Length: 260
Ligand SMILES: NC(=O)c1ccc[n+]([C@@H]2O[C@H](COP(=O)([O-])OP(=O)(O)OC[C@H]3O[C@@H](n4cnc5c(N)ncnc54)[C@H](O)[C@@H]3O)[C@@H](O)[C@H]2O)c1
Image (cartoon, rainbow, N blue to C red; front, side, top):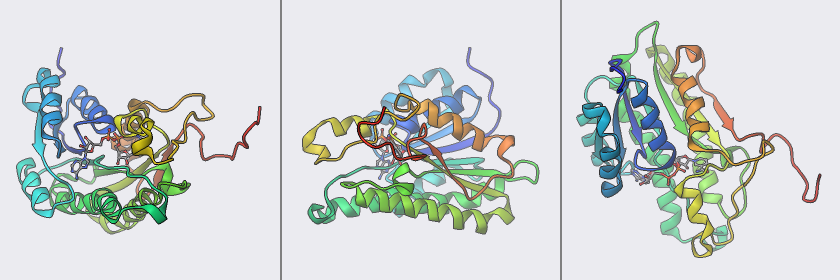
């Protein structure tokens, strides 16, 4: 049975795949109304079909997060009150820096960094409108383990995610007085189409995902969504400006090759 709506409203970018898709499902199951933004119209329509059981509580909106006019139009659809913004839209392009095409560098920075900035800025008035003293509005950004421990062959991606984590800190400090909490998640390898694409050597260009963590597996999208739900919950009412690793211990200690 579809749960009754809570009246809470979220915008989730990157809604048509991977972590964003899993985040939409979880919030819908928890009774939220979700505006799912993505630039992939066909996949977004398919996602909307899959969420038909939630009826009008899922609203797909085609949006290119790197384009200011597209972002403004999408947030106009979402309305004047937004309790939570979750920024999952992102791209990974790989190459040794000396070989990286400028258009790939720009795509990564424009999507991951500029897109996050544009969406957070566009959402802010509606987040402030929703915020109350006892229930602050929330922003959850998708950084990456790459922000904390970069790897070769993904330098542009690592730079974009380090910048997202820094945006998170400054947004948190600037926006806390008006009741908007901002945090970021830093997943290690998550089983999504973004990572699966790296199995193709033509796309990976030598990039190797971090792979299995000390916990003994790679993450599933719901491992990340569980921590996102904490950040959206009352339990996180005094948490802001952090980047939380969700990496099964991958960055905790270096494990030399050949170790037991
Ligand atoms: N999968 C991982 O291992 C991993 C690890 C750390 C961080 N992340 C981050 O998590 C987020 C989600 O990643 P994922 O693995 O679910 O990826 P994914 O490729 O499965 O999904 C990303 C979605 O973003 C959308 N998108 C891309 N550019 C867009 C744009 N300009 N405008 C609107 N939508 C756009 C895509 O169409 C896609 O639906 C990304 O920011 C990614 O960098 C992923």
